[in-house]
Image 1 (cartoon, rainbow, N blue to C red):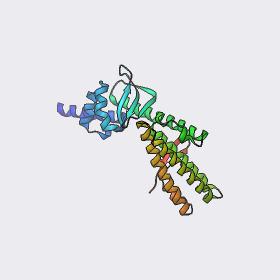
Image 2: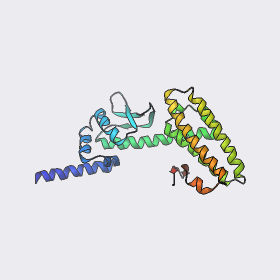
Image 3: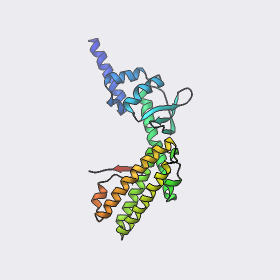
Length: 238
Protein backbone atom coordinates (compact mmCIF):
# COMPACT_ATOMS: atom_id res chain seq x y z
CA UNK A 1 0.00 0.00 0.00
CA UNK A 2 2.79 2.43 0.92
CA UNK A 3 4.64 1.59 -2.28
CA UNK A 4 1.54 2.40 -4.31
CA UNK A 5 1.20 5.75 -2.53
CA UNK A 6 4.86 6.55 -3.25
CA UNK A 7 4.40 5.69 -6.92
CA UNK A 8 1.31 7.88 -7.13
CA UNK A 9 3.09 10.79 -5.43
CA UNK A 10 6.03 10.45 -7.82
CA UNK A 11 3.67 10.37 -10.78
CA UNK A 12 1.99 13.58 -9.56
CA UNK A 13 5.38 15.25 -9.13
CA UNK A 14 6.41 14.37 -12.68
CA UNK A 15 3.06 15.62 -14.00
CA UNK A 16 3.45 18.90 -12.13
CA UNK A 17 6.95 19.45 -13.53
CA UNK A 18 5.66 18.74 -17.04
CA UNK A 19 3.00 21.42 -16.59
CA UNK A 20 5.73 23.96 -15.87
CA UNK A 21 7.84 23.01 -18.88
CA UNK A 22 6.11 21.16 -21.69
CA UNK A 23 9.29 19.63 -23.13
CA UNK A 24 9.39 17.27 -20.15
CA UNK A 25 6.63 15.41 -21.99
CA UNK A 26 9.36 14.31 -24.41
CA UNK A 27 10.96 12.38 -21.56
CA UNK A 28 9.88 9.24 -19.79
CA UNK A 29 8.95 9.40 -16.11
CA UNK A 30 12.31 7.85 -15.25
CA UNK A 31 14.16 10.53 -17.24
CA UNK A 32 12.21 13.33 -15.57
CA UNK A 33 13.06 11.92 -12.15
CA UNK A 34 16.72 11.74 -13.11
CA UNK A 35 16.57 15.37 -14.31
CA UNK A 36 15.06 16.43 -10.98
CA UNK A 37 17.82 14.64 -9.10
CA UNK A 38 20.40 16.65 -11.06
CA UNK A 39 18.44 19.90 -10.84
CA UNK A 40 20.67 21.60 -8.28
CA UNK A 41 23.77 20.95 -10.37
CA UNK A 42 23.49 23.11 -13.50
CA UNK A 43 26.43 21.54 -15.29
CA UNK A 44 25.20 17.96 -14.87
CA UNK A 45 21.55 18.87 -15.46
CA UNK A 46 22.42 20.68 -18.70
CA UNK A 47 24.58 17.80 -19.93
CA UNK A 48 21.70 15.39 -19.30
CA UNK A 49 18.77 17.51 -20.48
CA UNK A 50 19.98 19.57 -23.46
CA UNK A 51 20.48 16.60 -25.85
CA UNK A 52 17.06 15.24 -24.87
CA UNK A 53 14.98 18.43 -24.89
CA UNK A 54 16.92 21.21 -26.69
CA UNK A 55 19.13 19.37 -29.17
CA UNK A 56 20.01 22.56 -31.09
CA UNK A 57 21.74 23.91 -27.97
CA UNK A 58 25.27 22.57 -27.59
CA UNK A 59 26.27 24.44 -24.44
CA UNK A 60 25.05 27.03 -21.94
CA UNK A 61 26.98 30.25 -21.35
CA UNK A 62 26.85 31.23 -17.68
CA UNK A 63 28.38 33.69 -15.24
CA UNK A 64 31.39 32.65 -13.16
CA UNK A 65 29.40 31.03 -10.34
CA UNK A 66 26.83 29.44 -12.68
CA UNK A 67 23.87 31.21 -11.10
CA UNK A 68 22.75 32.89 -14.34
CA UNK A 69 22.49 31.73 -17.94
CA UNK A 70 23.79 34.52 -20.18
CA UNK A 71 23.50 32.83 -23.55
CA UNK A 72 23.80 29.61 -25.52
CA UNK A 73 26.20 28.05 -27.97
CA UNK A 74 24.75 26.12 -30.87
CA UNK A 75 26.36 23.50 -33.02
CA UNK A 76 28.53 25.15 -35.65
CA UNK A 77 30.04 27.68 -33.20
CA UNK A 78 26.94 29.89 -33.18
CA UNK A 79 26.64 32.00 -30.03
CA UNK A 80 23.42 33.72 -28.97
CA UNK A 81 23.51 36.23 -26.12
CA UNK A 82 20.23 36.38 -24.22
CA UNK A 83 18.57 39.79 -24.02
CA UNK A 84 17.56 38.88 -20.46
CA UNK A 85 19.77 36.54 -18.36
CA UNK A 86 18.01 33.61 -16.69
CA UNK A 87 18.44 32.96 -12.97
CA UNK A 88 19.23 29.33 -12.16
CA UNK A 89 17.28 28.29 -9.10
CA UNK A 90 14.79 25.64 -8.04
CA UNK A 91 13.77 22.68 -10.16
CA UNK A 92 15.33 22.51 -13.67
CA UNK A 93 11.94 22.95 -15.34
CA UNK A 94 11.77 26.50 -13.95
CA UNK A 95 15.06 27.71 -15.39
CA UNK A 96 14.61 25.72 -18.59
CA UNK A 97 11.23 27.36 -19.18
CA UNK A 98 12.88 30.71 -18.45
CA UNK A 99 15.67 29.91 -20.89
CA UNK A 100 13.22 28.99 -23.65
CA UNK A 101 11.19 32.19 -23.14
CA UNK A 102 14.30 34.39 -22.99
CA UNK A 103 15.71 32.73 -26.09
CA UNK A 104 12.49 33.35 -28.05
CA UNK A 105 12.47 37.00 -27.00
CA UNK A 106 16.14 37.36 -27.90
CA UNK A 107 15.53 35.91 -31.37
CA UNK A 108 12.68 38.38 -31.90
CA UNK A 109 15.02 41.22 -30.94
CA UNK A 110 17.76 40.02 -33.28
CA UNK A 111 15.30 39.52 -36.14
CA UNK A 112 13.86 43.01 -35.64
CA UNK A 113 17.35 44.52 -35.82
CA UNK A 114 18.07 42.67 -39.07
CA UNK A 115 14.73 43.77 -40.55
CA UNK A 116 15.46 47.38 -39.58
CA UNK A 117 18.78 47.14 -41.41
CA UNK A 118 16.97 45.71 -44.46
CA UNK A 119 14.49 48.61 -44.48
CA UNK A 120 17.24 51.22 -44.24
CA UNK A 121 19.55 49.77 -46.89
CA UNK A 122 18.58 47.84 -50.03
CA UNK A 123 22.07 46.29 -50.11
CA UNK A 124 21.94 45.30 -46.44
CA UNK A 125 23.06 41.74 -47.09
CA UNK A 126 26.42 42.99 -48.33
CA UNK A 127 26.98 45.39 -45.44
CA UNK A 128 25.53 43.55 -42.43
CA UNK A 129 27.98 41.68 -40.22
CA UNK A 130 26.44 38.22 -40.40
CA UNK A 131 28.60 36.85 -37.57
CA UNK A 132 26.89 39.24 -35.12
CA UNK A 133 23.43 37.73 -35.62
CA UNK A 134 22.05 34.21 -35.10
CA UNK A 135 21.63 32.33 -38.34
CA UNK A 136 17.90 31.84 -37.70
CA UNK A 137 17.24 35.59 -37.44
CA UNK A 138 19.11 36.24 -40.70
CA UNK A 139 17.22 33.53 -42.58
CA UNK A 140 13.85 34.74 -41.26
CA UNK A 141 14.66 38.35 -42.22
CA UNK A 142 15.81 37.41 -45.72
CA UNK A 143 12.63 35.45 -46.33
CA UNK A 144 10.36 38.07 -44.75
CA UNK A 145 11.81 40.73 -47.06
CA UNK A 146 11.26 38.48 -50.09
CA UNK A 147 7.68 37.68 -49.02
CA UNK A 148 6.90 41.38 -48.85
CA UNK A 149 8.58 42.06 -52.20
CA UNK A 150 6.61 39.33 -53.99
CA UNK A 151 3.31 40.39 -52.45
CA UNK A 152 3.90 43.96 -53.62
CA UNK A 153 4.75 42.68 -57.11
CA UNK A 154 1.57 40.62 -57.35
CA UNK A 155 -0.54 43.61 -56.27
CA UNK A 156 1.06 45.98 -58.79
CA UNK A 157 -0.36 46.98 -62.18
CA UNK A 158 2.61 45.43 -64.01
CA UNK A 159 3.52 42.28 -62.05
CA UNK A 160 5.47 40.77 -64.95
CA UNK A 161 7.88 43.66 -65.21
CA UNK A 162 8.35 44.08 -61.47
CA UNK A 163 8.78 40.36 -60.81
CA UNK A 164 11.49 40.18 -63.48
CA UNK A 165 13.19 43.10 -61.77
CA UNK A 166 12.95 41.27 -58.43
CA UNK A 167 14.43 38.16 -60.05
CA UNK A 168 17.39 40.22 -61.21
CA UNK A 169 17.88 41.52 -57.64
CA UNK A 170 17.79 37.98 -56.25
CA UNK A 171 20.42 36.85 -58.74
CA UNK A 172 22.60 39.76 -57.66
CA UNK A 173 22.17 38.82 -54.00
CA UNK A 174 23.16 35.24 -54.80
CA UNK A 175 26.31 36.49 -56.51
CA UNK A 176 27.09 38.70 -53.50
CA UNK A 177 26.69 35.78 -51.09
CA UNK A 178 28.86 33.52 -53.24
CA UNK A 179 31.63 36.12 -53.14
CA UNK A 180 31.26 36.46 -49.36
CA UNK A 181 31.74 32.71 -48.95
CA UNK A 182 35.27 32.97 -50.33
CA UNK A 183 36.33 35.45 -47.64
CA UNK A 184 34.22 34.39 -44.66
CA UNK A 185 35.32 32.84 -41.39
CA UNK A 186 33.88 29.54 -40.22
CA UNK A 187 30.96 31.01 -38.28
CA UNK A 188 30.11 33.53 -41.00
CA UNK A 189 30.35 30.79 -43.64
CA UNK A 190 27.53 28.84 -41.96
CA UNK A 191 25.25 31.91 -41.89
CA UNK A 192 26.07 32.92 -45.47
CA UNK A 193 25.54 29.34 -46.63
CA UNK A 194 22.09 29.28 -45.01
CA UNK A 195 21.17 32.61 -46.61
CA UNK A 196 22.42 31.40 -49.97
CA UNK A 197 20.18 28.34 -49.75
CA UNK A 198 17.14 30.52 -49.02
CA UNK A 199 17.99 32.88 -51.90
CA UNK A 200 18.24 29.97 -54.33
CA UNK A 201 14.82 28.80 -53.16
CA UNK A 202 13.44 32.31 -53.65
CA UNK A 203 14.89 32.48 -57.16
CA UNK A 204 13.26 29.17 -58.06
CA UNK A 205 9.83 30.29 -56.83
CA UNK A 206 10.12 33.72 -58.44
CA UNK A 207 11.07 32.17 -61.79
CA UNK A 208 8.07 29.85 -61.55
CA UNK A 209 5.78 32.77 -60.74
CA UNK A 210 6.94 34.50 -63.91
CA UNK A 211 6.49 31.35 -65.99
CA UNK A 212 2.98 30.61 -64.65
CA UNK A 213 1.60 34.12 -65.06
CA UNK A 214 1.88 35.01 -61.37
CA UNK A 215 -0.72 32.64 -59.91
CA UNK A 216 -1.41 33.51 -56.27
CA UNK A 217 -1.99 29.81 -55.53
CA UNK A 218 1.66 29.05 -56.25
CA UNK A 219 2.93 31.74 -53.92
CA UNK A 220 0.48 30.73 -51.19
CA UNK A 221 1.88 27.18 -51.25
CA UNK A 222 5.43 28.41 -50.62
CA UNK A 223 7.30 29.12 -47.41
CA UNK A 224 6.39 32.66 -46.35
CA UNK A 225 6.84 34.98 -43.40
CA UNK A 226 4.47 37.84 -42.69
CA UNK A 227 3.36 40.11 -39.85
CA UNK A 228 0.07 39.64 -38.04
CA UNK A 229 -0.15 42.38 -35.43
CA UNK A 230 3.12 42.22 -33.52
CA UNK A 231 3.74 38.56 -34.35
CA UNK A 232 5.70 37.24 -37.29
CA UNK A 233 3.92 34.21 -38.75
CA UNK A 234 5.63 31.44 -40.70
CA UNK A 235 3.42 29.61 -43.21
CA UNK A 236 3.98 26.76 -45.63
CA UNK A 237 1.16 24.90 -47.35
CA UNK A 238 1.38 21.80 -49.48
